[in-house]
Length: 133
Image (tube, rainbow, N blue to C red; front, side):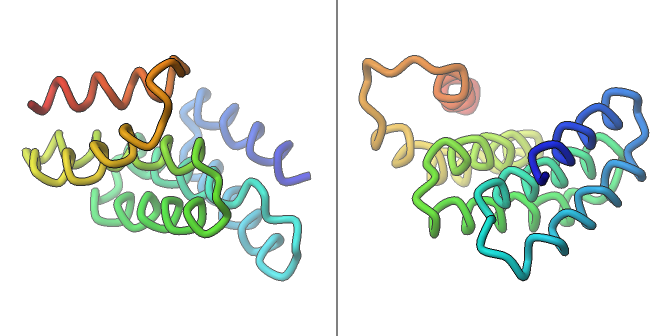
């Protein structure tokens, strides 16, 4: 159920209906708050941050979403979700000229993955580190 809502929120975002997408994400987060089925919670927080950025909201609001996503993913041991949220936060920090923050966030995370792994999210992490060198 939450994954379907996540996909629907993404579709709304592609249609540039950011307000509706954020509302749907917020409703989904409320729905899962009282359940044990929270496997997609971190991704929902990351998506909300992305929607806020694309919708023109303050970067501080998006930053809170990304930090929440990272915390949830870390707590759950969901390293891919942690990587995605960290990439999003690093992109935001890089755009604000916060280069040390980008490196502090991404360098240890990148090092925790086997170098043979070449998933797109990890490639993005490496690109963000190179851009902000």
